[in-house]
Each structure stands twice: as structure tokens, then as C-alpha cells.
Length: 182
Image (tube, rainbow, N blue to C red):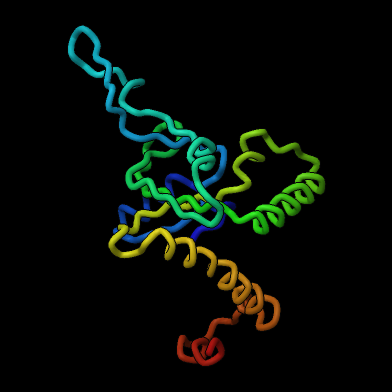
């Protein structure tokens, strides 16, 4: 389960190479592509790279979704190099969720002294998740619910670090450490 602060294409590729799984939110500024049905060719017969993929715009899909709805695109490519093939799950926020996210985003932008792009503001109403877990194993709704648990896991680690000082454990046998942890 990845936070946006740890969003890295190479890490996702490494996770896949190790035959492991990931779930991460997708940054709003990341381009999303699908295979193109209209491939152009040069005279020598090689396909034009620019015609192999078609960019899709999440904001267009979002406008067609109703509040609280999940939508899935099975095989998409993300990033400028289109090097990561993944599953994209979209969840359109309810009005209440959007209001909370908008307020938090405005407060955060003001605190950091930054201005959000029009695209980022437009995409505040949708949560975007990427995963390499097959649909047969984990449905779109389950991906959303599982990712929501990430914050609870993070709170546990934060508690362990602040109360139990787990980040500064002395060298001990594994059995003793496990007892302390339990």
C-alpha cells in the first residue's frame, strides 16, 4: 500500500518483477494511456510511436460517473514513457467527501504557499488507484476499501514510533523483539 509521497515508477516495476503486488493512489498530474486502435505506419512499415497509444483524460470519465461510483480501466499505461502497464480504478467522491477534500486542499496549498493547477482542482472529486492485482482476486470496490486501511496502518506505526520508540530498538534477539512488539 503506497502513499503518494512514495509514488515511483521504478518501485512499481521492481515490485512486479518480484511477483509481488501493489496498490497506490495515482497522482493527478500523471498521464494515462490506452492501446490505440488507430495505428499509423511509416512508408517502410514500422509503426509510428505516437500512434501506438491514445491518451485518456480522467476528467472526461469523471463527468460521466455518478457520486460514489467505481469505474475500472483494466489495461492502462501511465507516465510519459508509458512504461507501466497497470489496472486503474476510479472512485467518484460523494459531495460530502469532495467538500472535505477541497477544504483540506485549500488549507494545505495556502500553508505551503502554492497554487493548485486547474487539472488538480478538477480532479479533486475523484480518487484514482493503480494496482497490479487481478480483478478476479480483488474487485474495484475492495481495492478502494483496502487502500482506505492504509491510514490506520500508518497510525499504528506512528504510535509504535512515538510511544514504544520502535525506531530506536536496541540489538536484541528476535524472540525478545517479537515479545515487545506483541
